[in-house]
Structures are given as structure tokens and as C-alpha cells.
Amino acid sequence: MKQLIKIVAVAVMFFALPVTASAQKVGHLNVDSLLKIWPAYQQVVDSLSNYQIQAQKTIQTMQIEYAAKQREIDSTKATSTPLLQALRENQLKQIEDNLYAYVQLAEQEAAAIQTKLVDTLYKQLNGAIEAVAKEKGYKYILDSSKGGQVLYADPADDVFDAVRVKLKIPVPTKPAPKPGTAPAPAPGK
Image 1 (cartoon, rainbow, N blue to C red):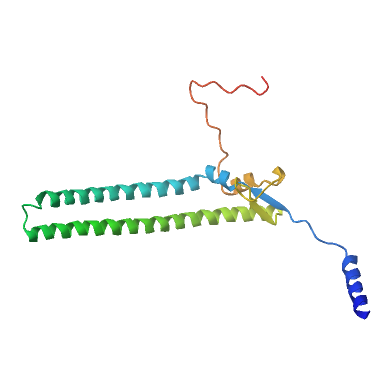
Image 2: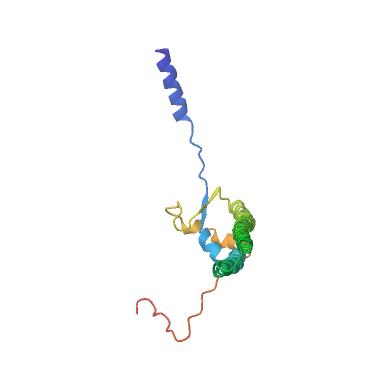
């Protein structure tokens, strides 16, 4: 009986306490849209793309050299001495090894460049989001990009423009209509 009284007393005290849970302010931001208009992000994408294009050109040049050496070996097989044939095959093997090594190093370097550049942008983005959250009293800022976990986001809590301003991203402009195209008709007409 004493046990039951203790349980009831604890329950009464628990429910008698005033509920002081404070609402936590939550904001949201479409990060994908922000990245699309962020010049620094586009520079990162362009830098990586240029690196990959240059690496691919080098790989193609090395592949051409390999194919040429293979043709030389095939065309001189009947007339070459075994020693000369072995020398050419060693050269071919060296070209192949160089090509493989270059591909491996280029992939590693591209990954390192990407990590460095993306980390720099990520720090800038997080810093801007954190500053906006503190200024506006948000406890959390969620990513409301398509495919994210945010099912509903009140437009009043969208911090897109505030973060855009912190990152010094210019206001996006609408692209001009292409010459010779008619503007879209006004709604309802």
C-alpha cells in the first residue's frame, strides 16, 4: 500500500508541475537553389571540370602512344630480332605502367582538390547559416531542398535570402527571353 501511495504521489507531482517547454524556432533553406546561384560554387565546379578535361586529354595522348607502340611491335614482329622485339615490348609495358600510374594519381589529385575546395565552401556556408540562425533566433536550420526530409516549411521561416546576403551572393536575375520568342501570355487571358 505504501508503494502505491508513493507512486501516486510522484505521479501527482509530475503532472502538477507547470509545463515550461519553450517552442524552438526552426528555419529552413533550399541549399540546392543557393548553390546554383553561388558564384564560388560554380568556380569550384568549373575548376574540377577543367582539371578532369586536362587529365582526360593527357590520358588520351598516352593511349595514342600506347596504340602506336603496339602497332610498331605488330608490324615489325616478323623482321625484328628477338632482342629488339623484347626491347619494344618492354617499352610498351613502360607506357602501360605510366598510363596506369597517371590515371591513379590523377584520380587521387582530383579527389584531393575537390575535398579542399568543397570543404572551404562548406565552412563558408555553415558559417553564414550559423550567423543567420543566431541573428534571427533559430535553434535549427533545415535543408528544404527537393528530396530532403522537410515535408512542410513555412515560407516565413525561409532564411534563403539572409544566407545569400551573408555569402555576398548577388540577387539572381531572370534570363532574358531568347530573340524571336514571344513572351508568355499573362495568366487568365
